[in-house]
Image 1: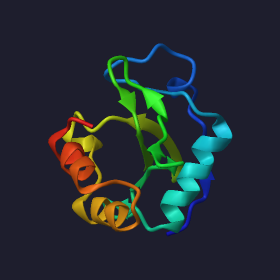
Image 2: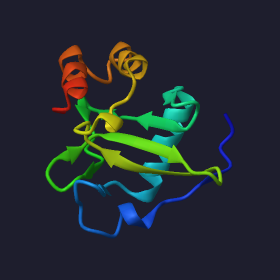
Image 3: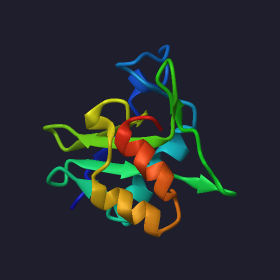
Image 4: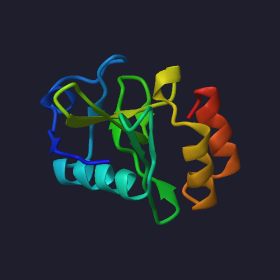
Length: 126
């Protein structure tokens, strides 16, 4: 998979958090670092069109953003028709905002999440 362009999307930085437009609370650099971690770790699905990431520091999952009603602890990155990538923080409330079971299993195996956290993500309550 080749990444040609990554763009920090201001839509997910300068607005108020809403259920359909989450907002990052981490820096631009942190956003890009998480994107790279997702790519390096192979947390990729949807025919190489979606990259997922998560971060655990000192035993706690990093809060990456806000969706207006919940903390967002997962990062989702998508690519458009021009091969330009951008990402946003998500809570797995919507089915499209849940990583695949293969990715969740890898996160669990790498001790990034626990089995109960994996179940919460799958049930949309994380």
